[in-house]
Image (tube, rainbow, N blue to C red):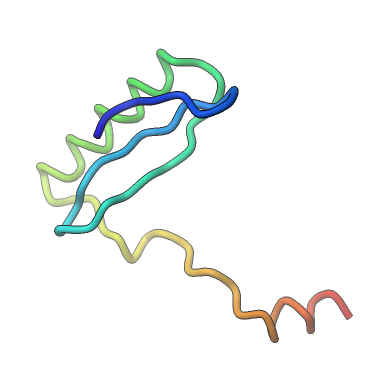
Length: 67
């Protein structure tokens, strides 16, 4: 868990409510570290909610948008 680089992009990895959360941040390590500390403070304060994350769009809905 923490900050790691995959390809040219830095990712943050942490746990919230017993679930593993991974987010891409960008190509700058310092910004990734700041995002990680911000997320960790949100988790510790109870302000981070998994429901805020976007749910994947169902295929049928995506197909309707395409057509």
